[in-house]
Length: 168
Image 1 (cartoon, helix red, strand yellow):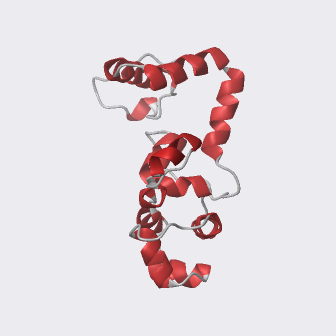
Image 2 (cartoon, rainbow, N blue to C red; image 1 turned 120 degrees about the vertical axis):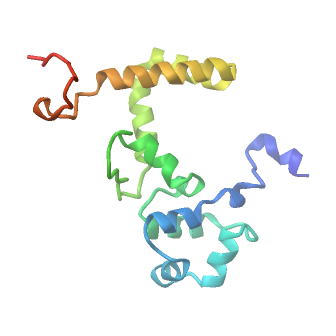
């Protein structure tokens, strides 16, 4: 019966893919503290965390609200979300605390509008590309990303022997 529902978007493993424990750790909360703040019984949260109960959308919304994240982020590891949101060279990256909309999704929509051809190419590559091609694209994009970032080390404090002409 599950196979019949799969084409319409049913995912029986959805509740097992929650990162509730990781989000609690990220926000420096115990499950007990989350229970106290949200008014949701600790036993319910434990059942959601271990995947033995399929949480309702309203329950997920309440949890996301208390964790100050969009509901969709409950299905992603906080570190993965952080990598998407922040500059990888930041020492103390922080996620936004606005939980009403998904700011990463908003950025994707904006990128799609501004760079539709590039967005279409990347989407096609991710969906249909060979893993080696995807890895090559990833390495090249990371290299390009590093080239466009401004230098963060002041000129006077660079290690001796490091030469990079100042950009005037």
